[in-house]
Image (cartoon, rainbow, N blue to C red; front, side, top):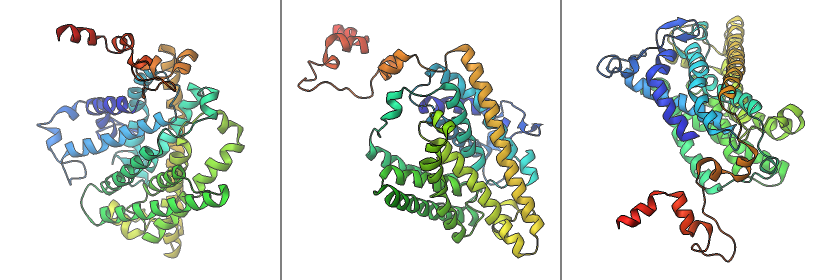
Length: 415
């Protein structure tokens, strides 16, 4: 699902998605689609709208954001969504949800950008969107089998930790690249990203240790992710102490919603959000957006947004005798959250219902029981019973090999 989403998003992004997100204004919330993303000799070789590097670099940088968002949505749907339905869902959701959010918040022509919303690197556009869309899609697709929901141990914690390390390292470019330049703001964003994330991870570990009696490697990864997500809308806009404060909250608030609130709320338990994307990305992203409105430092805001007095955190506005400006900024941040939330609930629901008319959203019970072999004709692992050798197992049989690889008999004949 992740591999398909990455490939399909790249094609759609170059054909129409990039220009719908960052192109000429069609409506206050979406750009005009065109094929400029394929014009390597013209549009792509010109300067990007920020003027710091070519449009081709901007196109690719923003493509990865779009692809990541859909892959996060997949995290809510693992274990039961029909792959053919996913193949239709990806381009539809990218076109009618992601591009609208990206244009509204990030494009200089978007209505939320003009209103002054602060989202440094995607707390709203990427994380809140994926958390809400994933949870909404999970509602329409339905839950996994009862057996899978009751017993869902990690497949491989060592690979999880390796992936977490790659993710944490990669987030340096995720947030550090948001200013579209190698400047002071980019450096501040990198340091704040790691400072918030480290704090968040420690807080999650401490809570796990005191409440459950033991530290958890998977819990540490969750704390890392919520820290990365929370700092994303604020990375280049806040001081180091504020980044640590955000880490304290990102390690505790999503922990509470996931570990306590989720288990007490009947509706949250009813919706099978496989990897808890609502908590790690939706809650953490909205928390980061709110804290950005409180803690954004005016001098750092000028580095990113230019000399515009509107951009100021509530705490600094009150200290400077401009409480009205801070309250206005908070209202804009909350309006941005509300818009992204409503957009993704509505569009994701419409897309799921439309796809469900064409193909089943959910795998059949027989396919769910069989697993990967029924869906792809492949197993992730070749396993066999105790006492069996590979040659005696189903995987070592001549008949299985020919079924799994019909070309094998032809190759043998040629040899």
